Length: 187
Image 1 (cartoon, rainbow, N blue to C red):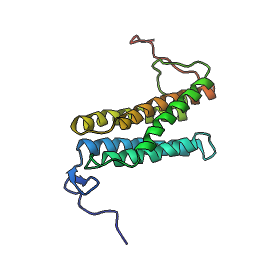
Image 2 (cartoon, rainbow, N blue to C red):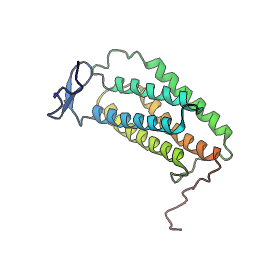
Image 3 (cartoon, rainbow, N blue to C red):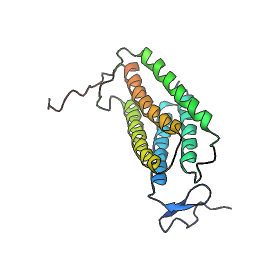
Image 4 (cartoon, rainbow, N blue to C red):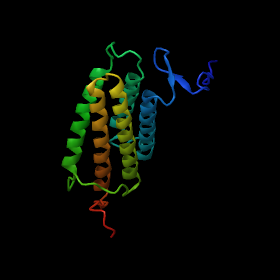
């Protein structure tokens, strides 16, 4: 039986696809670790929603897309085309369509800054949003070092926007008031 542990990472290095060894805090590994964290939180969100929730299939597809994104980032050779590119390009378009659909159902579309919270599902959506934003920042570091196709950063940018909209949709559906952040003044 194959074991999960190899001991090859005990010295602070890990492997990219193709076997190239890099430090565990290298930009690619840091970026993928952040994406993995967001993906895990999406898994928690799916559990909290229940298997019959209308978002289930879309969130499941996003989890699969994020695995593709991580595979793309972990590549050692970007000169070879990545076979999931069409899927991720379509994923960005789907995210935009889903956001548009959700916003049409809302009582009061907003572009304001909101204080995260409201209820458990909305708060979890905000946690995912911030994890995806952190992933985007790490991806920007990777992009400065290596050429990564634009559709990867577009996908991640749309994804953080989507989770902002999902948090709002959840609050709207449950008639929970949003708390708009207005200024630095104490109230």
